[in-house]
Image 1 (tube, rainbow, N blue to C red):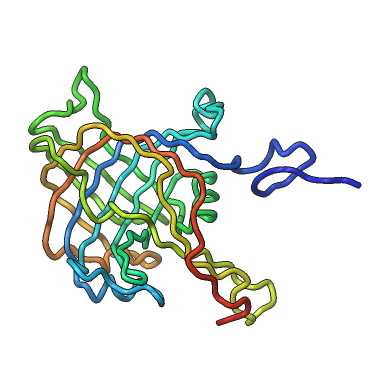
Image 2 (cartoon, one colour):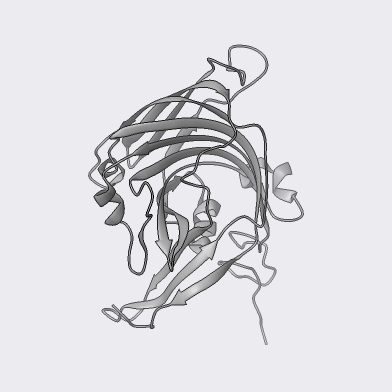
Length: 268
């Protein structure tokens, strides 16, 4: 009998064509995080039941640019960089579930197909986008990690610019921000193949880093602009009050999550 292999489609006789390998997944990245406050009602409208807004600072948002290198346990992808390097921008809010505070990614854009596939497994609502951010470097005109260093960041999708920012570092910080500082509460949804029959997969899951290491965070100030688009809704999380901006280099390992609750298959 013929069998097919691979962690994720396409599954083949050898498994070599699978879009992503099995976890654990390892990440090294440069993160620019901009935190601000929006209308709490705009956060609330993005939280499906049974999630509720965070009790403290319910309108807080983090918009994060990340320049990643990623790989499976063996690290093979790092020597074939097209398989390891990608960029993303994602919007994070906070919520509560059964009295515990979680972070939740409500929008996210990436520039590689394998990152979208991992997002499907992790419950991230990933879409394709064009993402760019200034990289630090100790030589030449690129910014150093020092007071006054300036970093630019842009996000576009479907031929429209959605966000742009300039971050100016001020000083070392004891934190890289608070909005994205909890385990994630995400949904994994898959519509039924039978039309009008609801969801075949409906899971609320908890997900987070199996391990984490990070360099010295820096705090600063940000100029952030969000733009309207006919196909995106990031601008609904309008900037009402800046909080702070951060730069940090991190290393993360993801190795699965935990089911919090599951809906009934076929429920609408």
